Amino acid sequence: MGIIVQKFGGTSVADAQACALVVSRIAEARRAGNDVVAVVSAMGRKPAPYSTDALLALVDCAGDTLPPRERDAIAACGEIISSVVLVSALVASGCPAMSFTGAQAGIETDDNFGDARIVRIDPAGLHNAIASGVVPVVAGFQGVTDGGDVTTLGRGGSDTTAAALAAALGADLVEIYTDVEGVMTADPHIVPNARFQETMTYSELIEMANLGAKVVHLRAVEIASQARIPLAIKSVFSDCPGTLVTDIPPQRMPIAVPDRFVSSVTCIGNMAQIVLEEYDFKADDAALNVFSTMADNHISVDMINVFPDMIAFIVSARDSARAVRALDRLGLSAVANPGCAKVSVVGEGMRGVPGVMSRVVRALHGAGIRILQTSDSHYSISCLVPEVDMERAARALHSEFELEK
Image (cartoon, rainbow, N blue to C red; front, side, top):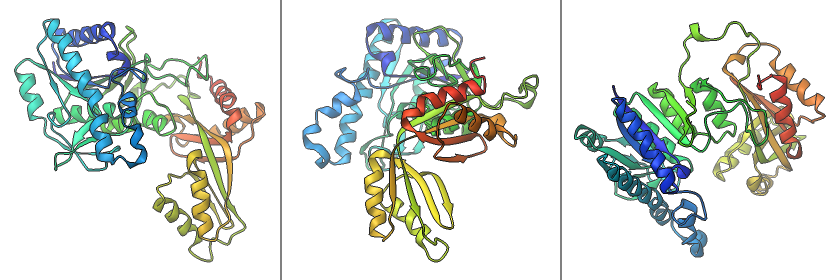
């Protein structure tokens, strides 16, 4: 067969019972004739003693004074512990295995501590282990700079580790084992009748991840898409086949259901709308200065609307006061409207199809929800709404496009 990269999240390796299930998943893949490379996250979530947050709490006394290099050094320890724990379980089951740190797996990154990006991978060590019949168990979420410093890849970085290793190894499949059975049409905590999705395209999942879905890390989907490696999202605790993310050939696209333009609904809360009005933005470089200032202050902006006499965009609520102060220094009077949420419909099938926005507006209007701002792409339409209405908005859109069916 080929190589399968299996990534196991924190809940999958949280205790001995969960580890036993992980061992069975690896054994199942090997019995099918595949070589397996496992990637692991830190064990459990806080207050679990070896979770990433618990480890970082050990240095909280230093506050913001601890250099990012040192925070990465301790943050990376959780995955290393997980890798050795899983190796011990595999060896006890009779399966030869060997732990690898990110550096030992050949993962080199830039030096952007806390959110490093992978520069290159030398998979020679992993290939050697596979050739000798050993299952490599790689500590996810981490790499090393060319100067030898340990780095971390940001939250959800173990997914990125798995996808990047799969690309470097020429793997046939990446399996992401998490605490959900696959990708749903919406967050089931918000939309109780959300439906499980058997297949999705890369574009749809990338859009979902961009718009707030937390099932899989955005960078991991992008890498899998670029390498054209199928991505399966599963639960180690269930026999559900999960969601398969891949390119869907045109001949397999449904033609009997022409109105299935939307595949999912996502939402992000805790946002603030920034509005600048009554300016002649054509007259000078004011519009350019607005966004240059946001970039200089490391403030991420979204849902950008620029008009001759007005600019509106959204930022994270935690950045809103900082954004207003930065604009005030430019002599621009900005108004921050807190308590906002971004609710989006996603679907590759909506591209070029008229009437989708009409249905979005109709659904939200029918639910008595005020639309503060909109934006769209080829695969999504987003509406800014009051955060108190976010869950009702998600349910209204899910119902409008009959995603429960």
